[in-house]
Image 1 (cartoon, rainbow, N blue to C red):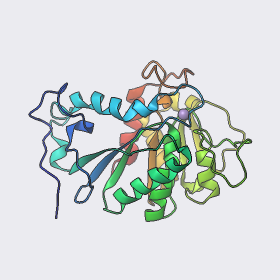
Image 2: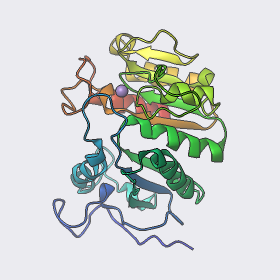
Image 3: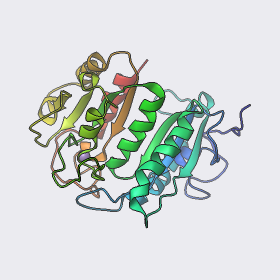
Length: 271
Ligand SMILES: [Mn+2]
């Protein structure tokens, strides 16, 4: 039985008031009965430059309020009439016991995925992808990774103790390949503008190629590489030029803009 209250994009509260949830969907404790569940992961201990992404989920929710004010453009419809979406709030992370955090995130994600809802994680620095991938692969099997990013995050952490998971936002996709969580042959990284000696067998569409390609061409390549199996989409905000997200942790320039990235993702994911 569904426990999801009805919701409408034309909410009764003003966009700048009331409890902040993503797209102003209902805040509930369980994803049971939902099609889509938003889950905040307020984590920033793994970043190597500018911290603060523990405040990310709240900031994303606040910014999303106005997106849920009017019917979608183009199209003029209310997507929340077609999918039951809920916001579970943020995972409680014990910052005094940082080693417990990856397991806490993984367990929270597994609980959501077990209900059948599609999980959207709101970060948080990019390390959170590792426990989210683990929980997703445990349910769906080995995954294709579609990653929009300035970095491949497949570097090796030379300082990590053998056998211990490095809590680093630049190494987790290497670990995911090594542990058989993602299939590199079906995975693709889009918008990369940092060098990596070993791409681990993952296809890279770098920033130079993307800047000279149409969204249609990029999306076609993504679909060809990924195929029809289960996939996991992750978007690092630094895939955009810093002009579009100047508080992010990487200020390397990129010519392409948010419009191109959204167009690529929409076309790649279209059924
Ligand atoms: Mn990045």
